Length: 225
Image (tube, rainbow, N blue to C red; front, side):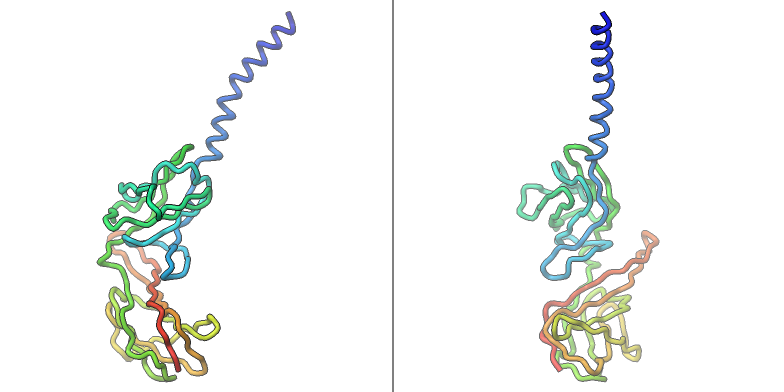
């Protein structure tokens, strides 16, 4: 009799414990997004605060496997394309050209749950670009003018050097600067090389009431002394 009672108690405890264990397992496996990184061959892999339609981004976090859906501002990402790569800690995909730019939200749905991450997709009309340089043979002390689009707020300009190094150039405050041009003074004592020019900008988003840092890179350019 005692043995039967013990067996009944064991079964009851198992029935109570199993849902709790399952719930704990699902909590541990719920997806989480920690950060968003740019993942394109035309620029360094780095964490970013915003992206544009057509760019490839990588969501980094935990428990991102068993992927069911990725939704960016109510726009579903086609998981069957060649641009989607999935692992337990990262999901890489290309933003569609028609992705919604309003909403500031990326949602990931896996077999075990769902998570939201605040992230801004900006319209293509706001995307910065470097289109030309006033010279590629650079002389110390002279001014280099960089032309492009949406370049307002430039705070730093970096040019490529030999041996995969780079140098920061002082901005020439005597020259006009606006959304299409920025001028810098060529430093002395360095050896320039083929590579990308990097512009670091401080932007203001009046609609969201925030300031943020954004970078833009030129195409690979053969700079020389």
